[in-house]
Image (cartoon, rainbow, N blue to C red; front, side):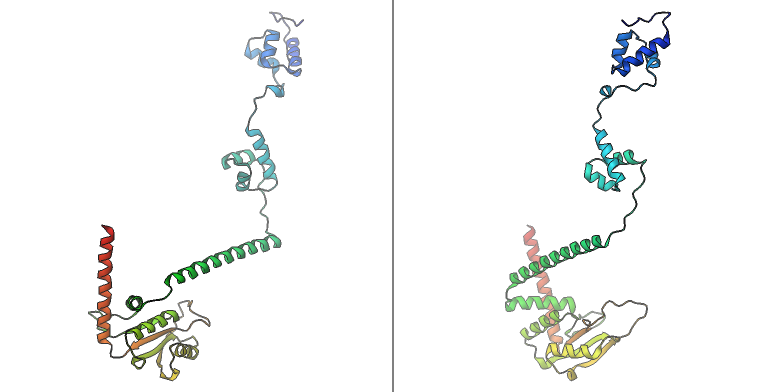
Length: 290
C-alpha cells in the first residue's frame, strides 16, 4: 500500500514513488489521487524532469503537416511548392521550417530546358491556330461586298489615311499614302467604283534612304500595274542616327503615294460623304439609346 504523506514524510521517497507511477504511464491526476498530493507546486516538484506519457498528450492536427512540410523543405521544395502540396498557409510553413537551410537554386538541366521549350512551342502553335480560325470565320462573315458597302468603306478609309484640307493649309486634292498593300488595293478598287480613270492617277514611293529603293519601286509598280518608269520621283527619308529603325528587312518597301489629278471637286464630295456618314451614325446611335 502506498504511504500517505504526512508532516514527517520523506520528500525523496515520495518523489521516487511519483516518478515510478509516472513511468508506469499514470497521468498527473492519477498520481495526485494515488499519493494524495493536492498541492500543484509540490506535485510539479515531484514530477520535475519526467516527461508525460504519450497517451496524455493532446493530439495536434498540424503535427503531421509540420513534419511533412519539414520533409519537403529538406528535399529542396520552395514555400510555394510546399503550399500546393499540403494546402496550408505560407506563414505556417515559414514558422515550421525557418530553422532549416534554404534550398539551393537548381540550374535547369538541358532536358528540362528542352521540355519547357517544347511546351511553349506547342502553346504558340495552339494560339496561332486559334488566330487563324478566328480570322477565317470573320472573313466568311463579310463574304462579298455590295457597291454601296465598298463606297462607305472607301470614304472611311480615305478620311482615316488620306490628306485633308485645313483652313490654314488648303489641300483640296485627293492624295492617299499607305504602306499596307491590302489597303492600297481596296483604295484603288474604291477609286474605280467612283469612276476615276487610270490615267488620272500618279504614283510615288516614299522610303527610307537606307532601304532597297529600286526593289521597292519595282514592287509598287507591279502591284498597281504600271511601268516603273512612270513613277514620279521617289521621296527619300533622311536617316537619323539617334533613332533605332524597326521597319527594316526584306519586307520593308516604304509607302506608296497615290494622287488623283484635278481632284478638288472629288475631294469636296469625299468630305461631304464623310459628314453624311457621321451625321447618320450619330442619329442611329441616338435612336439606339432611346
